[in-house]
Amino acid sequence: AQSVTQLGSHVSVSEGALVLLRCNYSSSVPPYLFWYVQYPNQGLQLLLKYTSAATLVKGINGFEAEFKKSETSFHLTKPSAHMRDAAEYFCAVRAAGNNRKLIWGLGTSLAVNP
Amino acid sequence: DTEVTQTPKHLVMGMTNKKSLKCEQHMGHRAMYWYKQKAKKPPELMFVYSYEKLSINESVPSRFSPECPNSSLLNLHLHALQPEDSALYLCASSQDFSQENTEAFFGQGTRLTVV
Image 1: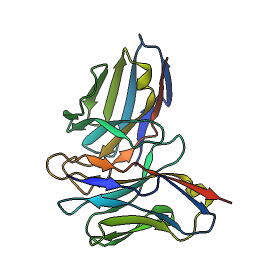
Image 2 (image 1 turned 90 degrees about the vertical axis):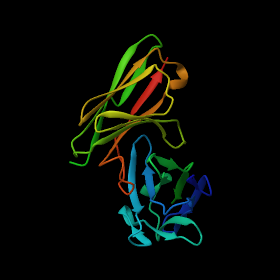
Image 3 (image 1 turned 60 degrees about the vertical axis):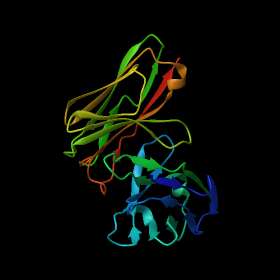
Image 4 (image 1 turned 120 degrees about the vertical axis):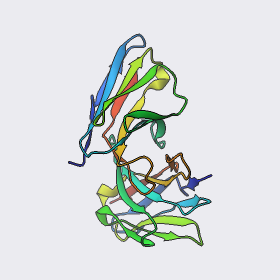
């Protein structure tokens, strides 16, 4: 069965610093992986997705993630944090088999300090 | 048009009330979803409609009743809710539920408070 672990429920960075949000997955089949962002009082917005085409995936708002099969990881990075990046970030994996629902991580709350 | 529109944005209802949440998408997606989300938690899947048929019901209490009138619309009928049902209710859609590599598009949600 698939699962997702997000290391660090809270991450705090200074404006302009590197953002690194960690996501490790468990999957018996090649996974489809997603990063979503949720700003306060809003719905979820897709940042990027991995669908086996390229291991380095570029997303919106300057974010990117690298799929590393050997480490079962799909960490999200951004070279320079901006105040508007403060939000909740969720990593998710698509379940295999007939049940195609998303399996979600518990989320990481990113704070950006001036 | 890449939006999923949910109405209302906020809803306060008593435990004896009947209300409905509405969701609309015009992306031609054939899968639509209802999620429940508590603060600082990931969304919890409630229902999945695929080609207008209920495909998944995650053992949701019968006081929540979904309806898919057509491929663009999804409703969630609420009756006799409890205070613990207060949450953000999110609607989402995707191109096809059977396609593993397609993402879900989410609406802004309805913030529901049960008093």
